[in-house]
Structures are given as C-alpha cells and as structure tokens.
Image (cartoon, rainbow, N blue to C red; front, side):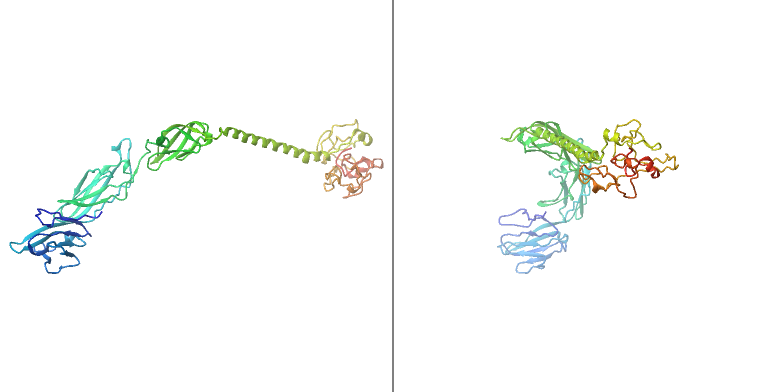
Amino acid sequence: MLAKERCLPHAVALGQDIPADSAARVGTDVTFNCKDQGYTYVVWVEYASQGDTGITVWHTGGQVSNPAKYEVDSTSANKYKLTIKNVQMTDAGKYECRTIPSAGPPKDYAAQLTVIGTPSCPNSNGQLMADIENPSQSDKAQLVCSIDFRGVNSASLSWYDNTGTLLPSSSSGGANSLLEVNTTFPVRTSYHGEACECRVTVQNIQDFQESCYSSPKFEIVYPVLQNIKMQPFDDAGVSEYMVGEHMNCTGEGNPMPTYQWEKISGQSTELTVNGQTLMLKSDMIGENTYRCYVENMIKGMKHEARREISFTVRAPPGAGPSTTGANTGAIVGGVIGGLIGLAIIIVIVYFLIIKRPRDRVIKYPTDEDLSAYNRPQPKDANVEKGKDIGNDFTAPQTEVEGQVGPDYIYSQPDKSKKNPETDQGDYIYSQPDKTKKNPKDEYNGGFRENYDMDAVDDNDNPPAVPFKENGHDDRRPPQYQNAPPGGFSYGVNVNDVNQQGVNPGSDTAV
C-alpha cells in the first residue's frame, strides 16, 4: 500500500499554508507547502544531511541546488512547494521555509520528515488445526512484523485479524531503528485462506497509512462442520420435486470433504450415491428418505457429519406411472426365456446332429437274421455277454440259446486267452474304416474296410462276396459267405478263420 503524504498546518493565519510534519515510505515522493503574506524573499533549507548547519536547497531568484533530488514550484503567487523525490532513509530530518518580509524580522516554518522502510510480514506457521468444540485448544499462530524507520516521530506496529480485530502483540525496537512486533493467537476455522494485517502508524501524523499482510495465507485444517446445507430444500422450503431435478449436499471442512448419499427408504434400487449431487430419477417417484454423509480425514482420523432429509418425487406432467418394476420384470423374463430357448436349441442339435447319426450307424440284426445266420461260438473266443466294449456300439439284449448272437461283442483282443491249437494270444479285431462313407447318408453305416462301398445295392446292403482289401480276405466257409457282414463277425486268430467262421473285417461276434 502506498503511503499518503500531506503537510498538515500548525497554527495557520489568514492566507498562510506552512509546512507540517510528514512521513513517507522509502521510494516515494513527499511535498511540503509554504505560503505567506507580505514577504519579498523565500529560502528552503534542509537539515537532514548537515544537521544544525543546514543547506540551502533554493531561494528566490535562484536555482535548485540538486535538481535530481529536489523540485520547487513557484508558479503560484506567494506559494512555494518543495518536493523531495525518491525518498530514502537519509532524507529523514528537518526542512525549513524561511520568509523575509519587506519590513520586520524573518519568519521560519520548519517540519519533520519521518522515513518508513517497507514492512515485512512473513507467515511461517504452515498447517494449523482449529478445534471446533474447544477453540482455546486450537493450534496457536505466531506472526512477526518488522519495519525500519528514521525520524524524530516514532513509528509503531499493530496486528489485526481478517475481521479487523486487534490481536495481542508486543513490540521491540525504538526511534531511528528496526522495529518489530510479535503476536500469538489461537486460530479459528474462519482464518483458513485468510491473512492478518500489520499496520504502521507514525506519531503525530494521523493520515499516514502503511501496512502489510501475512504471506502465505493461513492453512487451517478442521473437521467437517455440522452445518450441512441442502439445496434447493433449504432455499425453497418445499419437499416435493419433479423427476429430473436434483438435490445438492454441501458441507464445510478442510481438507475438502467427500460426500455420499444413502437411501433410508424409497423405491429406488440404488442404495448409495457418491458425490454431492443426488439426481431425482423415475424409480424414486413417491416418498423418499435419504441421508447425506460428509467426511474428511485429519492426521489419519475420520471426521463425519450427516443430515437426513425426506422428500417426495413426482412424475412430470403428462407422464404415466412409473414402469420401472414392469421393465425390470420384462428384462428378467426375457433373460429366463432366452436361456430356456437356448437349452431347447442345444437339445435339438444334440438329437438331430449328434445322437441320431450315431444311432443310424448302429444297425442290429432282427430275430429272423439271427435264426438264418447263427453259428456255433468258438470255444476260445474272448467275449462277455451284454458288455459294451466298442466305441460306437451298444449291446442289444438278444440271445439265442447256445448261439453267439449280436449281443456278444467286443473290440479289444484279450491276450490272456490263448488259442488252444497255437498256444498264442493272437486274437485280433479290426476297426471300421471311417473313410468309407455310406453314399446315401454320408455316415459310416456299419460298413467295414473289407467291402467295396461302390458295390452297395439300393437298400444300402454290402455285396454278397466282399473283395480283398488292406490285406484281409473273406475266409469264411462257403456256406457262410452269403451272410450279411453288418455286425455278425468277431475277431480271432487269423490262422483259424476257416474253422471258426470269422470275418476279420468286422468287430462284432456272430
């Protein structure tokens, strides 16, 4: 703040404007007035640099001794103003205007100049905590204000808080020296983001104004206050609102608090909402009660304030009743229906694409087939009644007494069973050749690698006499060579095929 410098008159006679004591801050300009009646000669003298001797700055008809430092304005009748430019500490002292009348003794009008340095107001407190419940226990701030001044009129310093209240303080220093003032006081929440002011006053000079403000500004931490505000509830004084409006929760604390809304009662499925704003949605139509939590953390401890509010939400004009429940039910029903539909599709695909072709592959002979083509069971064949040991076959429950029917199947050789004639465990079986496809349905319809797929008849039956392929012969006795091979053979020692009646190209016992 710039200082205001003005010369105040002492005992002023009619037509007089004589110099008065003044104060100026370093680097500013100050002016002294001198006006009187009935004189013919004026002299300005300064005593700041030479003490009692004094040095003439200017006189009537002459030039200013130091134009860089002084300036005299004599353009007005009988009025001579002395301006001291760029005031420094060395300019403090007495300045005198001497008038010499045409008759009578000279008159001397003197004034004192006090020079004030720039005040310093550092704030080195850092973060301070205010105790809301017991303010006297709050942290205490300490401030020091210092200033350098010169002059016979002493300066003084005082601290004021942000409301203009005088703070207790103690001073040190004296005239023509460095002056300091200290203050200590408990902080309040209202100090947060504010500064205190150090004011400078000079004795006998009422209109001098100079001050500085503590810097940086105060940082006061304090728990959230209980004065939570709800807008527009507090402002409007109403409790009914339309869908699309919102409710704001505002608290006070430092550090800045966080906010959360909690549903106490109402139709909404949303139990909590984070943030200051609660949007009023269509699923809140009706009566509602919500609680707003305001929280902050100080030194690892959570502080909380809360406020509960009840209000009613109405649908906008022309809008129908809330369909939130119906929409939710429709969504749930749609999801369930979709899952059921997916399950049905999976079952259909299984039976049409997977299971049905597999069933078509497995073609078991009828009782008529059994009576026409049964042969005695080889005494050393390793078979087990009713057991499914094939990859694609299920044993039918058909048996002809004393015979080996299609319910005696196996697909792996049992090397623990020895051929009594060769004493070798060389029973064998043959796998289907899945590269051979039924030309009509593209599935492996039970045909084996020994048969020419190009020779099937219109009923998908293999030829009566299979040809040799992949090293296998039809070595059955002639009376059995016309038997259809589709599931009526088993594998045994290849050395005994003519005696046993074996088709080594199949894997089913007959």
